[in-house]
Image 1: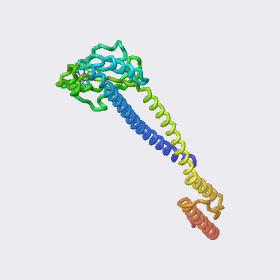
Image 2: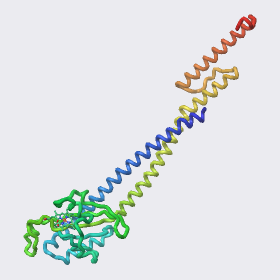
Image 3: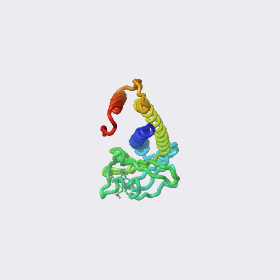
Image 4: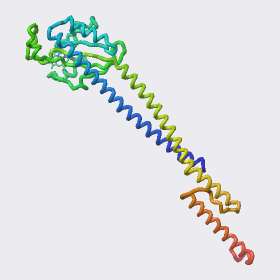
Length: 280
Ligand code: HEC
């Protein structure tokens, strides 16, 4: 009885705690992952802003050499997988990879379709819509941002320049950063969560077992021993040291046994005086 109560009480508790902890961890992991990816996209969008702002002066002065130098230096950065400046027609004007320069990209390519999906191209994109994730030709996971480079009054007024004021967009910047650091962080997070869940499981199941043993199984075992000892006709007054309902139960059992014993002895004395055939 002890072992069956034991398993009947502990197995469901262990299953419930395991299920609950796993569900919570999966949920938490999904949320944290989403937040980290959003943070990474914001970070890449800020980077693209910085690139556009730092190239602005060179663009205004039509200083292609400086611009090309800036783009090459950015391309040398550790996490930067690619960086390109397209002109409005989709021609790659600047890129650290000299083979890419002067290549033509169709507006149906990834990174262009976000704006060019409809009949009328969109003028601006939200931060999240600017981002795309893909695996590049060297097998690295990349998070890329396509940011528009807008026409400004200074661009169309610049003496050297030919952009007319009617153009709203001069080109786009496409910058891709490696997802490896994010993947590493997520991997670490996953391992820590698995360890954490394991710890919670062991601690909770251990604590529940200890509590159940102390509060339920032990009193029940004492009660069982107490009731079993009554079979040997010598149910003592030494109630087990239990409290609450179990003590009540022990007392009730003791009372009942006493009563049965009393009745038995009454019957016994009747048996002694009357013949057995009258009793039935
Ligand atoms: C931020 C949104 C945006 C992105 C991203 C974008 N474009 Fe555009 N594109 C525009 C807008 C707006 C115009 C119209 C500009 C104007 O008329 O002043 C345009 C015009 C063009 C044009 C000339 C007009 C036409 O429709 O044929 C070409 C070609 C073009 N884009 C190609 C590309 C290519 C290739 C890419 C990807 C490398 C790209 N665009 C990315 C918004 C975008």
